[in-house]
Length: 219
Image (cartoon, rainbow, N blue to C red; front, side):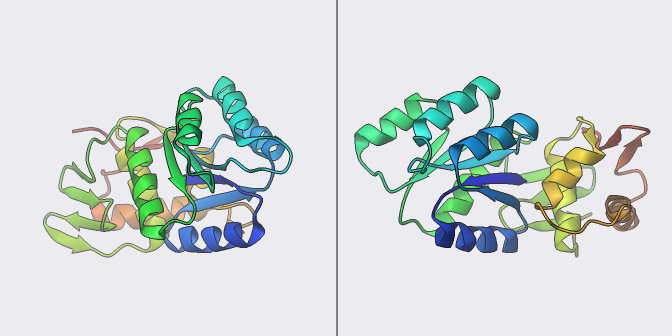
């Protein structure tokens, strides 16, 4: 899952980046509304975490402009404003969810999982395709009823493919969902992960769409 964090509090942003990356999420950070809109226009993430109290423009204004760029992009508002009026204004402006500071990391992760389910073809935390089952809540993968031990990158890649079963994922889109800005990525890293997954889950589980990317077929 690729996330854009729009937060001007550098200490909070650093803490969130560290915590969410430990959870296996590809998260990038900008500190202003203008930067956020530029990134979203050029390379939209899967989810935006948007602080309302930005230094250059109000978060509600960013949200309204964002909605003109991408009407369906999930947005979680993150703010110290906790009045009912602020919540209503945020939701009425197009936010999908609202989390007031201070918050518990477990709650943030639960909200992100809920938003992630909205953008996938999957309808539950547990996705089963053929003999492979993936539990997004426990981050566990089972193959024919037996645990499959996957490193973090392989799990993230498999999750993206299974959540979007039937949709072809391009190489660039997969790399954007697996890696944060600035991470060194070997030219064949994605192919290596695909190779390892096929060895563990079966050679036919992931299909190569030549010249485009990869997909997992729906059952």
